[in-house]
Amino acid sequence: MVKIGCQASHEQFKPSELLRYVQMAEQAGFTRVLSSDHFHPWSEEQGQSGFAWSWLGAAMQATPTLSYRVVCAPGQRYHPAIVAQAVATLSEMFPHRFVLTVGSGQALNEQITGDVWPTKSQRNARLKECVDVMRALWAGETVNHHGLVCVEEAKLYTRPETLPLVIGAAITPKTAEWLGSWADGLITISHPLPKLKEVVEAFRRGGGEGKPMILKVQLSYDRNEEAARQKAHQQWRNNIFDNILMTELRTPQQFDAAGAFVQPQELDLHVRISSAPQQHIEWLQEYVELGFDELILHNVNREQEQFIEVFGEKVLPILARN
Image (cartoon, rainbow, N blue to C red; front, top):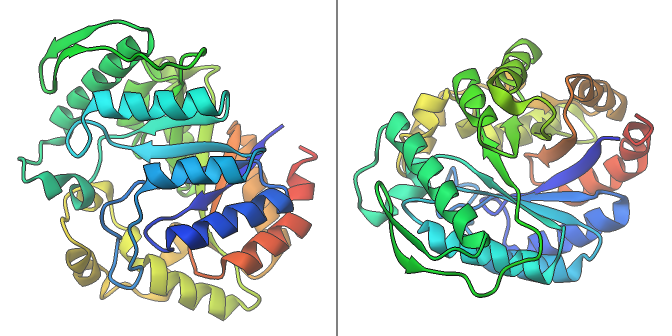
């Protein structure tokens, strides 16, 4: 049965607001939460950037039935040994409720260190090194590693009983196929179905057959269709560009400049916009049919309480029957 979660978007809401929303989501019947991990928001209008790792401990304590995931890019802003320690601590406190998802990152968040922003191939190689380091630390090894990241005499003394899962993030089929050989699963975002099918097939072809797959579904729900579209445009118009641009822009101001000419109707290929719960159900069922085990619903507008209430009442019970 597919598991349904919601997005904790630190770019859009204060941590205290997000804590209240995940408590509401738990009561409404959601079972998963995906936390973003940003240093900067995508736009000045979003205007937030709480520290995900501080928030996760509080959120997991406050919502004892929810399982959590976080999207993290170790290797530049975070040293992999520190990420491994953070994951081990959360996994020890909250067994079987935390999953790490990893990607190669965006300059928006990672280049605050002032280091050179590597090419995509270099970032992928660095990511794999980081995952190897973290898995060795979780296994109790003393790690020495000198490559794109360096580790010396590192050992984790507090470790969970079960090794944490590492889910790989991919936008393109090429990255998805590469992840299939070493990641414990796949996380991607909603695309038009033909493109999304290519990502799924590439992951399975690369070695991901039978591994769990998570889909972050970008949607906008409001009582009125025009309101749903306008509010999505206000909050998410900077997020519809090709990955080559999304990973290279460095500041919220640059994203705002890129999004200045995006028209509301251009969001349709990237955000599921509708005021009808039944339409959202039909869209989500298409993703279930592609084989996704988890759907993380990200209502990209700011009307979170309304979204949680309506989807908890009218959408989740239908999807739970699948």
